[in-house]
Length: 309
Image 1 (cartoon, rainbow, N blue to C red):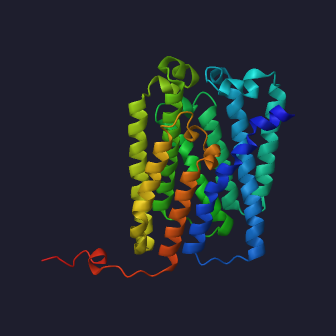
Image 2 (image 1 turned 120 degrees about the vertical axis):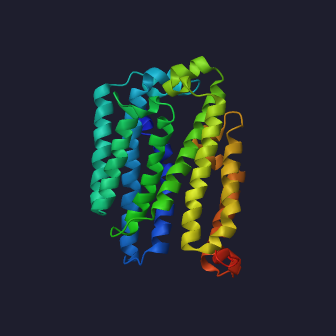
Image 3 (image 1 turned 90 degrees about the horizontal axis):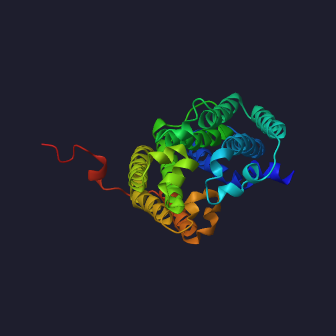
């Protein structure tokens, strides 16, 4: 059973930490009416529901990508490619992951369940023909990064089901995911080092180049910081002092993509980038200070008509 567990990628569950910002934002913006025991229950159920729905997507991804992964330097050793696995058992695993995810979601609330089902549906759109968005240049990044926004919504609905997060943070989080995904593509394309082989592994790579991937990641980063900046300044103007630290995080992450066998190709391995984790800790501390400490802001930052004639 080890190979069937492996294709569910439990080591990738760490990616579901992206639900945490949704939880934090909900507590900051909403007058939350939830007890601590209820929150802990929701969080545990919600986290593992997301893990199993994500694993369902990973299972069909591994099975349907087998014919292409054989052209990847490392993915050709995945169990579906290198070992004899049964389609019936893979589909049974897919269904079991969905059932567990849906049951756990039902224990929270209906909006949470709906978002989980959308997350599941996005996995179908991304992996299954005839649509299979992962084969379409640029759409592959945009469609997969929707999952980033969905995870923020899942974190939000763990806390409350009566409202929605501001659109600015949803769009910003979406583009932040697109930046991460485009950077991953860039690092992967550089690592393969052969455009023809890269095209055999991933159809969208037939139309990408290193320049296109790098420029697109820069575009996504600008969009992400723009919308996140709108959210931060709209809800607490002191956050403007933290924006340079946010810009630095995007630059820091992009620099990692240039390393040989970069961790940007495997975000679940980013814990090995100690300097990045240290920088992220600094950013969190800065945002916490700006959240709870009222720093006086100059009038000309707050009054757009101060110098009007």
